[in-house]
Amino acid sequence: MNNNDISLVIATYNSSEILEKSLKENIKIGFAAIIIVDGESKDQTEKVVKSLQLKYPSLLKFYTTPRRGLANARNYGTSKVESVFTMHAGPDNILSPDTVT
Image (cartoon, rainbow, N blue to C red):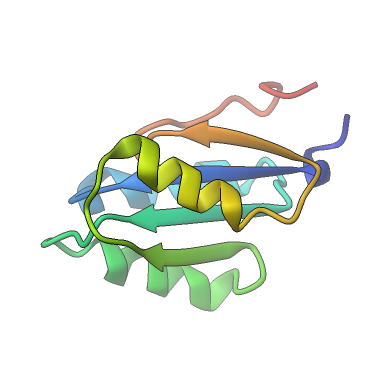
């Protein structure tokens, strides 16, 4: 399996302090897309993602949804996936490059 066949969905809420490091590390893995679904955070989560989107516009996808829980956010993110496979992670998860081999 190739990492380019996998999209990573990250559901987040008020995670700006940990999200940037997580995204920078997970970008290195080579996913087809990283989809961030935010539940209307009150912190700088959107700003963090938008600044990284400038560097990785085709990789990072950002969506804001009403805050209806983790399952709803993951389902919404999964509905936006265009790759063959999907993985889910939290905003603080840094995946190992060999997570999917």
